[in-house]
Amino acid sequence: MPEMNYAKKLRGWSLRDAADAGQLLEVTCQFCRTTYRFVPHDLLKLTTNVSLDRLASRFRCERCNRSDYMGLTVRQIWGSEYGKLSVRRLINVTTVKRPIWKDGVL
Ligand SMILES: [Zn+2]
Image (tube, rainbow, N blue to C red):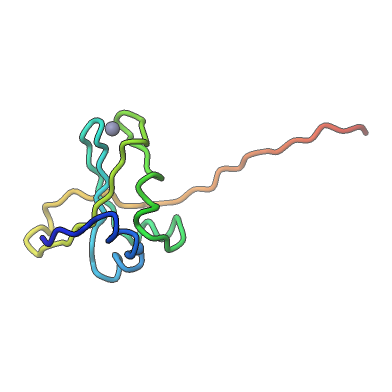
């Protein structure tokens, strides 16, 4: 896998670019060393087409509940990895109804 200058590379590479290139996004919590892999197409259902350097900070680690140690790398998939690599897929998006109240007089 070609290593890249990541900070620079991610700034010029967007979610859509990664999706079109058939890449996966690996988000790793440097604090507890947990890695989550995402399919860019899934993330495009949740956010606009942002550049990848702006994405890492939007994840939170489910294991240690921290978001300040998240790092993101792009991973090119090799044919031999199909059927083996664990990936987190989006199955549904729900909308939470949150009431907003205002006190007034009748
Ligand atoms: Zn963690």
